[in-house]
Length: 508
Image 1 (cartoon, rainbow, N blue to C red):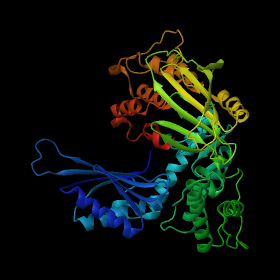
Image 2: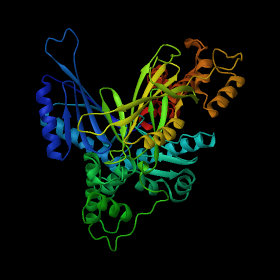
Image 3: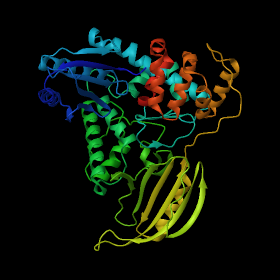
Image 4: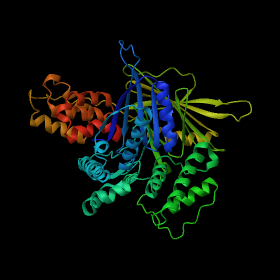
């Protein structure tokens, strides 16, 4: 159900091909990065073309290299699809190589932009919100839409859709689509909805950056703050210059100018951009996940890695706070390691338990001030997680731990109900269908898996396989879900549910 295209061709010289990709990208105003086995062409935020290089088999005496490319365009919109196809046109001409292009929208062969927009992108958007409404009606509390599963995820209330383009009240979106048509909402949702990079495109780029990545902190705090603040200001000023009649987020623009230390351009006469929700997920508390452990921290915390350890920190000059996290996989239920330092407390949390130790005082160098350190050892099935909490002062460290530790939650398999599962070789019976529906509403996805895995693979029909794949998707075992869906691809190619489940990792 995702939209995009794939390409395939054969070459003999990767370096020469990459040089051509680079020159075409620069000429078009895009960015390209390469390594020995791949290239990525970045058109803009959320818009990438991926190229992978693979040598042919052992009998490849001519040193032929296969090039396979993939470009998902449903998030940005039809304008990105058009731009990416036109880049492929130029790349074919520059390399004098013919590409095999499989385009789900038929734009590559038809070149009808308006037809592509209405028949494919608008239809895709309407169907996705229809499915989200169904999930909401069934009691689902997670309404993440097109969200990168590798990022943090925002906290939200029931009935609120979280997307990279902002928060939407589901009932209001449904009303708007019903009364005004999908075209009106598509104008606001797709960043690149028109054929050119116009004022709406630049405003969409800025809004996406504000919602998803902006910390709304002073630029002097870090290079990342300076980068994202400056980027948003530039995109918004381009928006205002291209179309002064387009609603403009004045309040956020002026706030970022203050944080960046620059003078805002005049915005008198430009209508304000209005939204029900305050722009910026990182203004509040956000959720993170390491393996099976979930926890919450202020969205204003910067993120980094240090030799495999995740580091979250506020980068404050005084009264600073830092949380370091490392997760380890274990066989079965882990036991606590022996720690000589004083244990402050031992408690259970949802799905696991932890011990908190006072590690005393640490000091990074002789020139820096010493600081207090706590160590939290968190256990859950098949995972041992170490959290190191630091702060400039002991009272601040105590406050940090008292706010952080109650947010710990562990995903854990739910023991299947001791109930006989009855099925036929062709279709699930009504009893099992009813039970699966109950488990799905209760988000007991592991119970669905345990039940349906009892059915021999040869006896699972299309519907059974689809429910099993959905359950694996819901516990984020996407590879297993893809394997199941691939086994019924022929039946599912035209089925909307199959396509939705196949695209679930990229959508959510």
